[in-house]
Image (cartoon, rainbow, N blue to C red):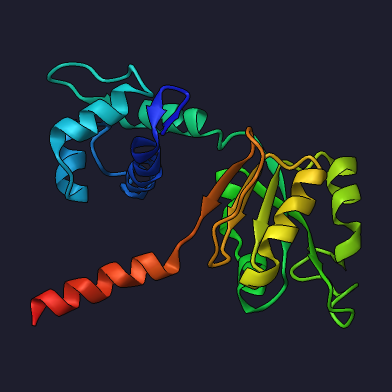
Length: 209
């Protein structure tokens, strides 16, 4: 899959580069090489150089990248300077944890409301985010121009919630439900497959025995 000329694999590595660069102390040298980034992150130098070339022309031979310029270019490419309104659907344990996380703002994500069918939750804000009735979801999304939906609902209702988000004009869905979702062309679905990640860990441990 290509995203604006950049592969999905490359796109997935860019936040890692950005996080590492931001973690460097103020006492660090102002410049950094692709080789140094690769060594710090356990990646191949050629891969790092290729990834960064896709989003920044700040690199110079024998000098490397000016860290501040590279951070700026990565943030611009990833759209972190733009606030994107999002809604969360499903205020269970995972939903509550995501609502309580304060780091999303750094990545340009603003969860403006959460939705649930449990009437006991309605009207009780979570860290300032209002919880609204599920039947208000599509109208709210249309009225507020919401572009991103976060699904933290059981698998059996995930598709219907996805459909409702699409009806509300949402164009990107972050899916935490353990199920494959179908959406019209032009709607991106990013699934967080925890089972897949756990399988990799289990396989690694099995091979180590």
